[in-house]
Length: 234
Image 1: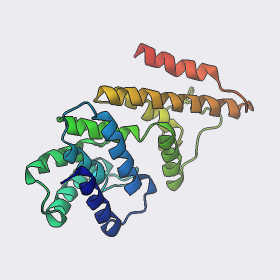
Image 2: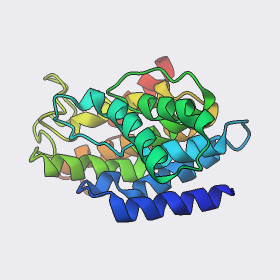
Image 3: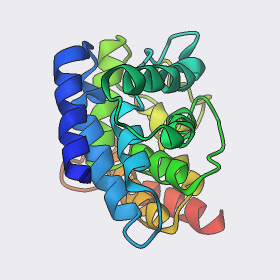
């Protein structure tokens, strides 16, 4: 069966059977992750059906960021994915079940599961790339708003004189997690895309810091230099 038909069937199932309120992890998110995954695996021998399936079901169980069992969500999602495939897609190849489940489990940052297959590496990279760049920026503030967290510490936005705390300030999440993602990428294509998107976040941080000082026409060049220097030395 063509990949495009499997994709259409997965989307139809999700639209009719999957109820959730997190718009940062909706069907549109799954579609974007799949598009990114296709770019990453252009020159690889990765199994397209395994990658597609994991992209569309990796967040089928999605616990809130502040949930005490957040680190278990991807394992629960893998179990639910196999249940759905067995119950609703009986023609899905059973020999691919384990590969799909592993790719779903390993995608999660909080689970800290090392991907062992090419397909799992592609899915992990594609999902993490969604956390970077313009969409990633929007998601940080969307999620923080839903949790009732302040956007940033106006007096010390980059935490020069305090500990980073992304459970309190949304902007702290950039340094606490997002800007570290490029070094966690599993594929060469993923690393290139991640560094490009991370540079966008650094320039956003520099613009925000300038505006907090009343400069609406420029950026704080020392902020850009700080993070680009860190990248060169790492």
